[in-house]
Image (tube, rainbow over all chains, first blue to last red; front, side, top):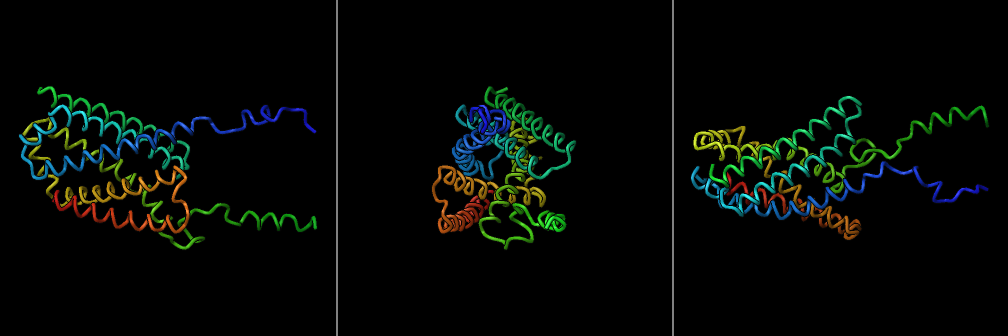
Length: 126
Length: 137
């Protein structure tokens, strides 16, 4: 019979302790995206066949600028988390796995920055 | 008994341990096919759909010439194909994602409801695709 406390035995034997945050963030961003995709569908209906002036004035409105930048950021964040799981599950080559992981993160963050800058540019009328 | 041990070990090694849902061990099922489609549509949206949306926003921001060029590109056959596929992927991933969120609360996990919601998502996503493409194309 071991004299070790059951808690002491269990400690340090678990996962990397970061899984819950990933799981939670994936679902929280999914909930947000339901609302934001609702706005996207509204935008698609508003802008179908629109000319440049209509598209520009639509995105430039503060509410639509807020929605579109938030959509880009949340979408790419959710995509980044999802791609990570797919890479971890199917890419078994140790170097390629890290390369894909890095590219997916770098691409997502670059896209977020690019999206925010361009929507801001429109919203501020530059 | 001991002499047969390696043989038993060999057999144990050959048995599929937690086999992948798509492959020789399971029949294709609505639930497993929709699960892998959820991932595939998610990857497509990440690699094609989201960049396309971002590209369109950038085109609006870059002025009339860039916007016209973008509209021309989207009107071509590659653009039409990319938009159509993205719209289907978005419809499917969004509705099936809601099904997954319901499951995450511990509800609707029995086989019958899983299938009912599965068919509802499939039909709903096709209807949403047709509706959105009717507006877009």
